Structures are given as structure tokens and as C-alpha cells.
Image (tube, rainbow, N blue to C red):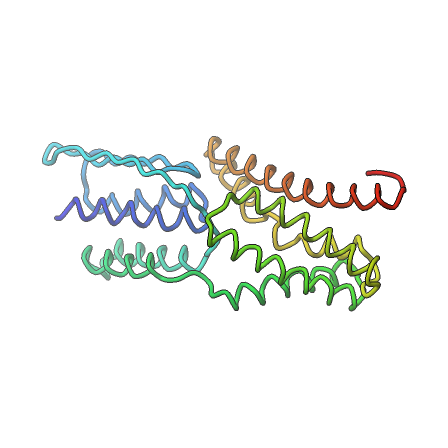
Amino acid sequence: MNYKLLFKFALLAGDIMLKNGAETYRVEDTINRILRTSHFRVIESFVTPTGIMATLDDPSIDMITYVRRIDKRTINLSKVELTNDISRQYCQGNLTIEEAYEELLTVNKKPTYSKITLFIAYGLVAGFFTLVFEGHYLDAIVATVIGCSLALIHFLFRRYELNKFFYDIVGGSVIALMAILLTKVIPFGMDMNVIIIGSIMPLVPGVAFTNAIRDTIEGNLVSGVSRAVEALIVAASIATGVGVMLKIYYMLQGGVGL
């Protein structure tokens, strides 16, 4: 068996899954299942939201230990599903290690969602959540416009690789500013508060918060706490952006501050 290729395959599978929104316990389980096909004596992996550590050892080989840092994370569950499928097919003997590794490289190079898809998704999420929160259809139109603006900001930040938390602050500020302009200055929307609540939904860290709970339940306390802190910081960043802009607006109006 080409155990070095097996090790590279397991690490690449973990790398793709962790970068695209999988829970850490699922990443560990996938790596371990792949490495167990070697039937070697020592198989260990330890995964956190920011790194992967794995070891493969046996009296017949020189021990392999590898640490890989994960700097960037996003949400692309289709890549997680494809990686899961390839790893299962390999473990069931339907693919050779060479075939599985080649397919995984293809998945890794697969482009993320197109700009048009993200642009539409941001707008629809903001617009329909505004309706869910009992907003008027004019409020939904305003929220859709704001959602599309968030997508443009997202593209800009991704292009220049700027900090995500800074993006959340700027995004929150833009949401509040546009909601004020389109309800108070240009009275098109009906309810500024509902528009703001619906428009922040594309930024809400729902996946991070869900993964934090699932990792904690599975006993991965370090990963669970890390993801929970990440979700809280994102939520605080959004609230900061919205709060600062509303505070400025109320101060200019001479009304009661937040």
C-alpha cells in the first residue's frame, strides 16, 4: 500500500471539509476512517477549527506526523458532501487510493458559488426574511436591495482578502445606513426596524453556532468553545455596525440615543 498517498488523501479530505463548514468531529471521523484502511497500529487525528494534526505509525513504516493550519474558512456544503461521498466510496473499496485522491483534487479545485448566485442569494434571503418578520412587501424590496449591496461588499472584501470581522462591521453599518436612507430620507420602505432585522440574516453565523453545539455535544469541547466564540464575535461585529449607525442617526435627529 502507498501509505504516504493514503495519508495525503486523508489530510486533503479533512482540509476541504474543515475549510467549507464541516463540524470538527465529522472531519476527525473521516480522517480516521480513511487511515484505518491501512490497518496500521497507530492512527490518531486531532482537529480544531484552525488546524489538523494527524499521525500514522506502525512497526513496518517510519512514523508520519503532520500539522496543517487552516487560515480561511467559508461555507460550501456541496464540497463537504462530495468529499464525504468520495471517502465513503474509497473505504467501501469502490475506488482505489489513486482514483480517490484524483477525484478529491478535482473537488478541491472546484470553484465556489458564482458571483451571480451569491448576488441573488443575498438579495432573496434578506427580502424573504423581511416578509417572515411580517414586513410590508415594500420593506422586502428595500431589504432585497440591501442584501444585494451586501453581496457587492462581500466580493470586494474577498478580492482584497480583508478581515471577515471587519466585513461584518461594515456590513452592519451599510444595512443600517441604507435602511435609514430608504425609509426616512427617501420614504419608500415602511418599517426601518423590520428591514434591518431581515437584512442582517445573510450575515448571521447560523452554521458556526450550530457546529459549536454539535461539536460540544460530541465531546469536542475545544472546538465547540472556539466556534461559539467565533459566532459571538461575528454577532457582536454586526451589532456594532448597526448600532453605531443608528446612534449617529438618532443624535442627528436630536432624539433619544440607543
